[in-house]
Image (cartoon, rainbow, N blue to C red; front, side):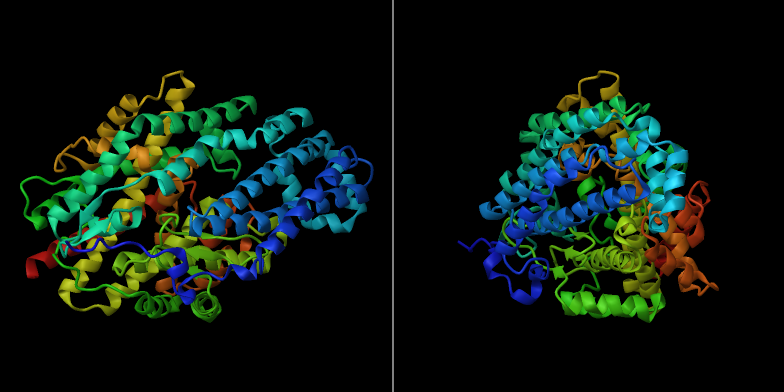
Length: 603
């Protein structure tokens, strides 16, 4: 019997392939000390209640204290979640993360009076304070952002009640996360070499790219067997989380959970509806791409597990992590020396946790806060897709670095709406680089296929998710029970609508909703689609060296929360209130689909 390949334990991963969290806290004891310092300020922040309106000085001091408290809390929280994510089976860091979550809820509860008290002041009182204390000038946009939501902020007592229920409101999301990342046990399957491998989130993604159809099919079937087994539990966690969104929207006087979610960043709901409308209009392009895949794979029936494998057989290019670092630096040259210096720091100074290990959180992300490095989590497997993931997450981290080093803490973050633009601009620039430098028709066709598949996954697939997410919130608001049967029936039909008649309907894909963590993120996924579309426009401006384009782009990366996202993007050169940028992205997709079609005839 061949020995089953197992993921390494966390302690077995080479140090240079792990992130250096000692730069946040050198020891857990330092974390404990910082934790206690934050906890010790809870009483003081409560004592400040009722003081903001006394004078311009008291107004300024109150803002400073509350923001500094949140600043210190963020560092504590980030350390706990990164430590927990690197090995979710480690009970020590499960406990530390639980403590940090509890502390965050207590801070929110203790400071719940803050925004209502600002809103209790008249515009005239606030203007007087700004005139009397020049130090307040730096908080002008911050205060305007708060006062613009007057009708949706509750009384101090009501805000405290909601804040105190924070842990309860996040319970369903936390339960899903633990179940999905730590407790679900997936079967052993065969890889391309016929070896037994333990199926995991990361391994599943790798096997779905296999050129061996039986390997893809087995991984697909076995993964969904597990989710189907738990689909009633997962429907319960998702339903409960949707109810939290709808409840919060209702008590805050929003017409819907979507309006509440988008209004926090002043994004018009029309942006969401325009995305769905333009993507629906161009679904025939996706159907055409799917039909091409079917033809190239030479299969009578095409299944969902056939949509990620290279259509030209074995991939002619893939990258080890070391090779990917070199390629990333080369591809990102158009972004200039200032940008590349940060990329090199990320590689050289252990910002990145590279390989998959037992218990490690699945997927990839960039995380951190104002006083930490912008760390990157990966689960590396040698492939072109992982190179794209690397430059994607690097886009987030460089964005974070620029923002935190050019804005004060109050504006030292940015909305997810802006975040996905930075990451996918990198992806588009990488694609341009590969198409410029790779002349081998097979490699070129492979890159085109990868781009088209990435477009499918980022714009078409994420818009499908966005449509599903809006549906479940709308249905729950109408009082419709979100049972597993109801969710699977709708999702199966929606999937068929997006992929068309050339993809066979199977029972497994109807349960896909059960394994998508982004459905717990509260109207998050649409921003992948809008972001990729905007990034397509920005990348084109940068690569073609349009005058002023790079400077505008870097200014966007440095803007943080100093202005509303829509306005930041207008200054960067893209008006996201109009459908043009999505239409333009569709034109790129069609042009590259045409190129792949013509290339295929020459191979």
